[in-house]
Length: 372
Image 1 (spheres, rainbow, N blue to C red):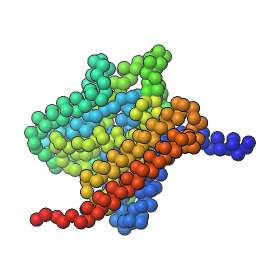
Image 2 (tube, one colour; image 1 turned 180 degrees about the vertical axis):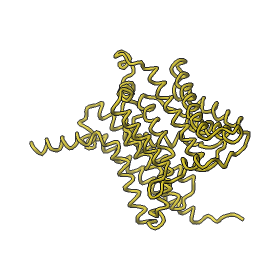
Image 3 (tube, rainbow, N blue to C red; image 1 turned 180 degrees about the horizontal axis):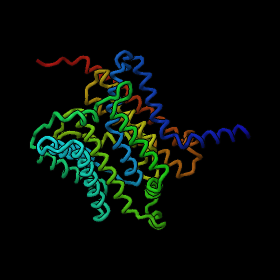
Image 4 (cartoon, rainbow, N blue to C red; image 1 turned 90 degrees about the horizontal axis):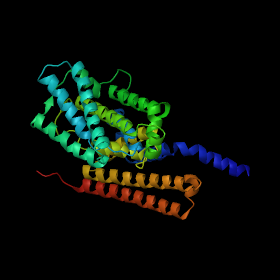
């Protein structure tokens, strides 16, 4: 009897942290694999710094996207918002002589304005989130192309490059501090404020949330405004990191950020969110892509590997959420059911496919001779 009680108590204690346990296990697996395959190159201080810089670029957007996805939304326009905000900031600095201390806040406000437009299109005109943000992605990208006219704007003031790749002597890089600060702010918003509580309530049941007095449409607009501002911040970080910006920059920001949030345990069906999980998801994807680069695997195989991780994560969390709805006694008890066994076999097959793809990609990368 005591053993059963102890088991149930342990399971219940693990339930709130399952979102972060999944990506942390994958991170540990990557560390162990790279410790055997390429320890000298992967664990160099310079390489670890590259991983942190890459992860920091996506942290603000992952924080905001967590709120959007939690309330059953999606934003496919963050890449174009980042590019257009960066282009506008660059024009203000390079061609109109604005101070960088003025241009950066203007870029953030522009990103928030584009997020506001997204939110109003979705809530006022009842356009589905997927279609609305996909259409606005085309609009914002088109505006960036029109403004830039094929130009690459480069060589910005030191303040901007410090934001994107600077480092406090003897401490972590500045963009990492910015990224972690936004994740901490997001955690506080999600767990300690009405904004976070309303977000989860809307995602769980929008109709019930509206009946309790929550202004559902207005709250959705707030989430999209936050997402737009954080996308602009991502564009600023990218500009500072590269010391350059062009209209075609940030083409895969939306997929990378959504993948990180979903891998971190935030449910695409709404009502379940984990800011710590989103943070772990960003780190996981950055570590995985860096590991593939370290193993000299081509970019196309990196995309395949990322897709496999996303599919397996979504399948796992969808199954877990279904078990919660069905009252199957939690995810640990659900693993013993026939559906749980099928889920485990499916996950094992996907992991085996990933390993096979990595091996195949490494084989092709090692046997391909450069032309010329």
